[in-house]
Structures are given as structure tokens and as C-alpha cells.
Picture 1 (cartoon, rainbow, N blue to C red):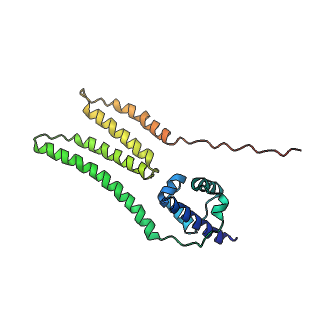
Picture 2: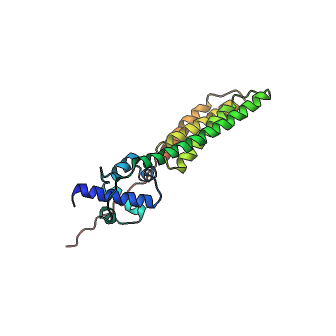
Picture 3: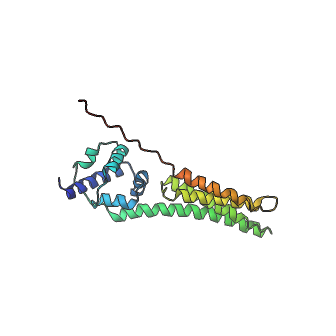
Length: 205
């Protein structure tokens, strides 16, 4: 089998297996730590996954690597419009949730204002709640590439709330604790399991 033919066969199998599991390109990419653009290239037959990724795909879909590389049906180029529509609908959902949270806090602020209470610090809670909502949504839709930055931003927003709502004078020293807290966030988000190579069996003489 020539390389171009192998790319098309592999593309067809990845499309069939992915859609069979109900995954979008972005969701499959998140599970493999690749972008949806890379998945799209594989499914268009422009590139082929390396041996390690093929092993990951085989484990994810519950098939053998040979199954992914073998011809089962005719390859069809994926419809780009459908892929884009799915991706943008997810982004719209996330935007609606975040804006909805901000709108709820704005309504609360205006209501208090009409009652003669102007509490601008309410927007600190609004910002923190919006970040938390965004964090939950990217976890739900497995958009995890920016996860560590969103968590770090949420931690910073919590420290800001504590700073402005402490009953005593606002201690700037509080933010000294923020530095190691943010470092811990980035370290925790980048913990990866080590892959131990299997020892090679030596031939007996």
C-alpha cells in the first residue's frame, strides 16, 4: 500500500471511529493532547499519526493498530462546514454561560443601587464567578489547553476578594502568599506520568 493510500485509509477509519464514539475533533484532540487542526489534517488524509499516537487511538477506540491502518470502506473527505459548526456552537455555549453569570451580578448591582446601596465590590464576586463558570465549561467540553491559566486567574481573583473584604486594613502582604499559590497551580497542572519503557527481552544463547 502506497503512503497516500495509507493516509486516506487511516483518515477514513479515524473519522468512522471518532463519530462512532460521538466525539468532535476538538474532544478527540483534547484526549490525545493535540489540537483539533491536527485531527482535521489526519481526517483529510494530509498527514498520518505516528506510531505512539496510533497506539493511543487504538486503545481509545478499542481496536488494534492494524485495524486503523487497514482498509474497510471508501474514504470520504469530511465536510468542513459541519466541523466548524460543531466547534463554534460549543464556544457559543461557553460564552452564553459566562455572560449569563455576569448579567446576574449586574442585575444584583443595579437592584442594590436602586435601593440606595452602591456596592462596587460586588463586581469582584462577578469576575470570580465568571472565571469559575468558564473553568467548569472548558472542563465539561474538554477544552483543557488553557486550564492552568484559568485556574491561576481564578485563584488570583479569590485573593483579591479576600483582600478587599478583610475587616482590618487591607494587608498587601496577602499577595505574597499568592506567588507560591500560583506556582503550585502551574506545577499541579503540569504533573505528568512518566512512561517507563518495557525492558527488552534478550535472546537466550
